[in-house]
Amino acid sequence: MRFVLTDEFWALDALTPAEWHLVSELPAASDGESFSPSTRERLFPSLFSPETLLNEDTQSHLEDWEEFVKPDLKDSFDDARNQIVQDIAEVETVDIEKMSEAEPTNTEETISQLKRLRVPLDHTEAWYSVLNQARIMMNEEFDLAQSDDRQLPQSQSDESIDQERLVLLAQYELYSVIQSILVDNVMS
Image 1 (cartoon, rainbow, N blue to C red):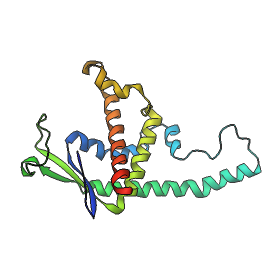
Image 2 (cartoon, helix red, strand yellow):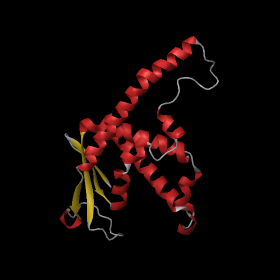
Image 3 (cartoon, rainbow, N blue to C red):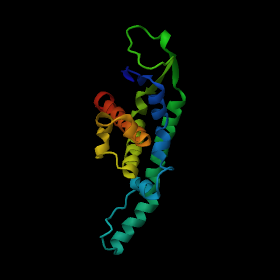
Image 4 (cartoon, helix red, strand yellow):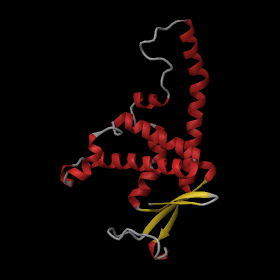
């Protein structure tokens, strides 16, 4: 994967099939449907800790949260996710033979086509939000952020690694990298 930035758009370019699959899964990873209810609730945390005693004031705040804030947050998340779905639908397929010799290609794999995803600059906030939603829920459900097994691929043989966990870690790391790139290059 390469990151390209112009005055009009940024792009994830030269995405391998595996990278493209993980990027294309972003809307599903951020909608939370495949996660537990407690994980989905992580996007809309309670205003108060469970130890907080309910009284008239806290009850009023909770009711306002449920009636006004939570629906607006959900709408905002849905709007951002819908923008990402539209952007992903515009992906381009690039034949490797048509790429210039100066562009790096993955010679270890037999790949004849790569993907290029161009995103208008004004969609960046939506991408950052959806990436963040996905990472929050993935971490909540699978404990990925501080997990010791983030180092597994370097320390163990392929046979001893849980392949599903490895894909989750790769997805989480890719989303982290894209967020970091956006912060450092587009949002600053």
